[in-house]
Length: 67
Image 1 (cartoon, rainbow, N blue to C red):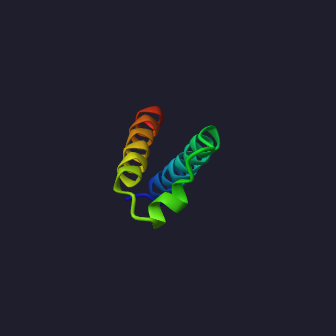
Image 2: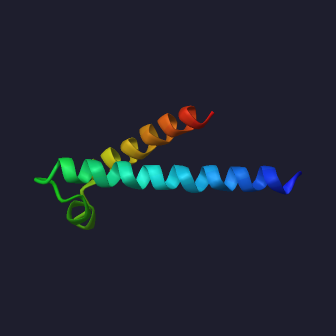
């Protein structure tokens, strides 16, 4: 395997993680009445499932955009 391919894939991985973080922070700012961190610490499973679904959907969108 060529090192350039590994570097490109690592760049895509870092870019995807950054895009997921930006999307999460944006969604967090758009819903000020819900404090996701506090709800997760309280053990709210519905919020955990919602955040997981958000991350999966963002990953699918980023994956298709980078393809």
